[in-house]
Length: 256
Image 1 (cartoon, rainbow, N blue to C red):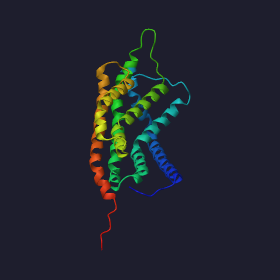
Image 2: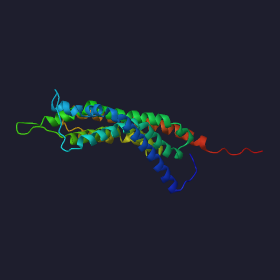
Image 3: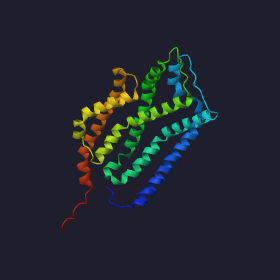
Image 4: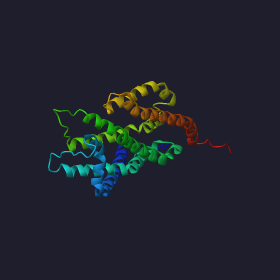
């Protein structure tokens, strides 16, 4: 662990620099993805359009500049996703000085795993949950009401849910950092497993509007597995931490 004490202003300056690097990476990614804005837009809205009309539905744009700004948001979303390795690398770089030397070697696994989990969460929501949700909402159309969804609302809902699933799948990383900070350990996490299961089903009930247990289990199951993965990470960390602390302690000088 780095024993150097920096003033608060130095930490804030470093944080500002790292956030600026993240934003630059996101903007570069957004600029590169602008060429494919229409394809990205179509992919994002495909679950909603398929739910409205399997043979091809359409959404409504209610403002003159709505299409342009939606394309900008599409590019920014993709720019954020493709820049995730940079984002997580900067996050790790900010917290690394407070870690032991053996723990700092986890930088690359942290970046790769965090990126993979976020993408996996977004993909899981997009491919598995979104079609169920939009089909459920579209089923409320009747002889009195015709579903005429607006592009802005559907796009906003899709992006928010995509990000929510990505963040939810970061659970093992969050648990690992809690263990790293000494807030929890593997035994505490195992004792709280029943509450984790309950929380997973509560989150599933909020994110999936359908009342059937199959759909809710479809989302709660991966969350429970991710929680157990976090428990495993905390257990491995607990076994390695004493050795890391011993190796970081200065050796007493030998008698001449």
